[in-house]
Length: 487
Image 1: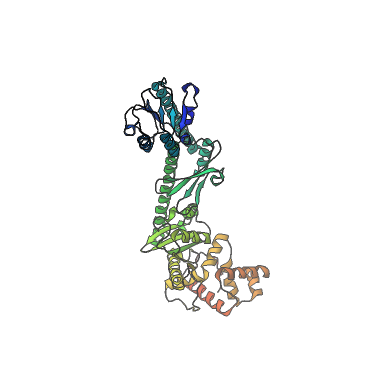
Image 2: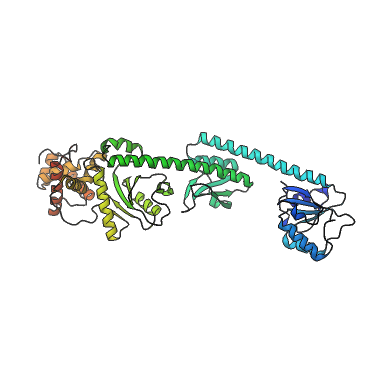
């Protein structure tokens, strides 16, 4: 569409901006001829108002008042082709136009307003055709990006390349960039714009305009924002589905409907490989995300634990990753408290690990810690278990890390510990029984101490580990593990 400056620059029209040239960049969206004394009642924003001047008042004060009311209608400019009997424009009116940056254009009376209207309308129609073609190209580009690129970052890169822009999407709450085109940096571009994206995502589109960027039309911007809003909603629905599936699996494991050992392959396919732990989470009261929607937090997009709401707690099964715990704390708010279990072992099961997590949560609340692992605060007491739950707790506390390490790494740390204790801590006899070099035995026992937090050569360490081993053997909790047959 034409601007006032572009229209006045057309030599054939012989137009002259006599006042308000500071507003000559205004866009002309239509043309309207009005000879009435109150044209502002009949024009729309962006209209080029054309008159022969017969409706103008004659006094300076009245002309200024007339112009102010016309300017308030958001017309783009005023073209006057004065008739001989029209009142002259007063200096006060021209000064008011300069003050309001409202262009007044002088034309000869011989200028036919019909021709001027046709010129303006044709420019508007041409702009609409170009806008339609650009919108069509945008949708075709997006459809092609859906076929070519598997991730949203790749699709955003295709759009950025086509539109010659730098694009990114940020979380409106935290300001974290959640999707960025694989080229360009909006924050380093000329004229950074931040445009809200409607929907649940609570996100902003960042547009960094390059010198020859092509996205100058607000309708095209809205089209792009709409496309990305649909894309974000689709990904949110996918994360909602993952959350529901994870909660169902976690409840099944908790209710003993599914054995933990049987669920291991499913968990591995979902990305839960290596050492796993349970979490008992007391969400904060004023965090960026609540317990029901925390899986949508940007920090958890790439990796999110299985989550299950239980009363006022959030139970979770997660990879043993400190960064995951920090992400949960940041997403749920500063007053959040998390209890972390020991490593989940097949011998002890999920229910025992959740019990450990709840105990760790209670200790964290008592001590004022944000996150606490089971066993980090030890009472110093150790007694033979009186029931199967107590035996499970004892095995999980003292041997769980070894059992899990052996499973993941195909190692024999538990067998090494049992053999060492059976030989009353004799290094030479243990190395002979295990058929390993003494230095290998020293390395293994050092690793046992690191994983359990207990020095196996101390009297207290021997007592704790010996009772845990006996409890595990007597209750059948060590079946399937690589342990020595002679004790």
